[in-house]
Amino acid sequence: MKLDFARNMKRNIAASAVNSGIRLLFPFLNRTLFLWLLGPEYLGLNGLFGSILGVLMLAELGFGSAVISSMYKPIADDDRDLACAYLWFYRMVYRWVGSIIFLIGLCLLPFLRKLVHGNVPPDVDLYILYLIHLVNTSASYFLFAYRGSVLSVHHRNDVLSNIRTFTSIVQYVVVFLILLLTRNYYLYVLATVVFTAISNLLIFRESRRLFPDIEPHGKLPSENRRRVLSDVKSIFLHKVGGVISYSFDNIVISAFLGLVAVAAYGNYYYVVTSVSGLIGVIYGSVIGGFGNKIHTETKEENFRLFMKMGRLTQMCILWSSAMMVALFQPFIAVWTKNDPTLVRHTLTPVLMVLYFYVNQSRQILLSFKTAAAIWKQDRWKPIVAGVVNLAFNLAFVIWLPDDYKLDGVIFSTIISYVAIQIPWETNVVFTYFFNRTQARTYWLTHLGFAIFTLVLCGVTWWTVSLVSLDGIMGLLVKGALAVVVSGVLMSIVYRKDIVSVFGQLCKRRTN
Image 1 (cartoon, rainbow, N blue to C red):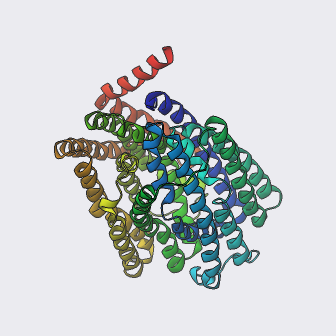
Image 2 (image 1 turned 45 degrees about the vertical axis):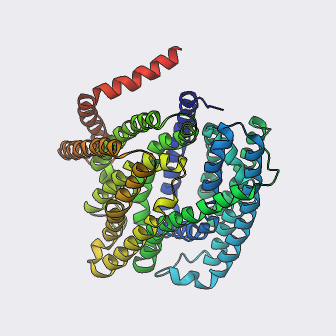
Image 3 (image 1 turned 90 degrees about the vertical axis):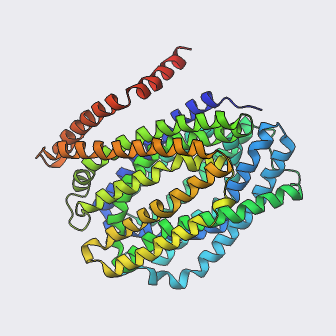
C-alpha cells in the first residue's frame, strides 16, 4: 500500500506545529514558575532525574525503532498478518523492558545522594521523588506504549500529536494550579504520572479505532525475529552513545558543579530544545513517509525528496540560528530576572547556538537513515563519539577556570558531532543507499548553507547590538529588528525556495 506522502505530511506538520507550540509555551511557563516559586535547585533535580532515567531507558535497547522500521515493508505490501505479529512481539518485549527498568532503578537508590554535589532542598526527600519518577518511566512500557507504532508506520503522526497536545494542555493547567496554590513538588511529580497513563490510554484507543485490523497476535517468524534482534544490537549502541552525549552532561555538571549549575545549563538547553522542537515538526512528519517511499519508489526519486526536505529544514535552521544569536542572552536575562547564578557570559549562548546548528543540520539525514533501517554500518559511531564527549567533559571540567567549566561541557558535545558523528553517518548513508555523486551534491549544499549562516548570524547580531534598551521592552524591540534584518536577507538569498514553498501551500489549499 503506497501512502499519500504529501497529504499525510501536511496534516502531520499541522498537528505537530500546534503540539510544538504548546510544548514551547507551557514548559516555558512551567519552568518560569519553578524559578520564581521554588528556586533553581528544584529545576536541577528535574534535570538530574531526567538524565538518570535516560540512562535506565537504555534497557529498551532500541526495540521500538527496530520494530517500527521492520513494519514499513509489511504495510507497503499489505501483509497485515506479519504487521500484527510484529506488534505482538513489540508488546511482549516492552513488558520485559518496563520490569527491567524498574528493577535496575531500585538498585541505584543507594548511590543517589552521591550524584548530587552540595545540598538538596530541605523540604523534599530525594529518594521518594526519584521513586515517583522511576514509576512514571517504567509504567509507560506497560500502558500500551507499543500501540503508537501502528500510527507511526501508517504515517499518521498527526493523531499522536493531537493526543499529546490535548493531554499536555490539561496537564500543565493542573500543575500550574498545584504550583500556585500549594507549591508542593510531590503533587507536581505525581501529576506527571497520571497524565502519562492518560496519554497512553488515548493512543491505545485511537490506534484501534483507525486501524482495527492491526492487533497484537500471531507469532513472528524466526527469520524476522533474528533480523529485529540484529538491528537491536546496532540501535542499542546508538542509544548508549546518545545517553553518554546528553545524559552524562547533566550528571557531570551535577557531580562537579552542583544543582544550580544544572539549572543554568538547563535553561539554555531548554531554549535550544524548544526551537529544535519547532523544526523537528518536519523531521517527525516525514519519517513514516520516507519509510514507505523507500519500499515503493526508486533511489533517484528518494534522493530528490531527501534533498528537497533538506533544503526546507536547513532554511529554518539558519534563520533560527540568527534569531537565537541575537536574542539568546537578552531573553535569559529577562526570564531569570538577571539572576547572576543563571545568566552566563556571552560565550555560553554562542556555543549553544553552534551546538543547535550542528545538531539540527544532521537531523534530516538521520530521519532518512532511520526510515531506511541503516544502523549496523555505523553502530560503533555513537560509542566512539560518546566516549570522546565524556573524556572532553571531564577534562574541561577539571582543567578550565570555574567560569568556563560549563562552556567546556557544551563544547565537548560540539567536538564529538563535528569530528566523528556527522562525517561517519553521512558516509554510511551515501555508501549503502545513495552514491558518491549524490554525496558531493549534499556536501556542497551544506557548505553553502553554513557560509550564509555565519553571515546572517553576524549581521543580525551586530544590528541588534546597536539597541541599548534592556528588559522586556528591549527584548521586543530587538526581536522585531532581528526578524526584519534576517528575514530580508533570507528572502534575497533564498527567494526561489520561499516562493516555491508558499506556492505549493496555496495550490494545495485551493485544491
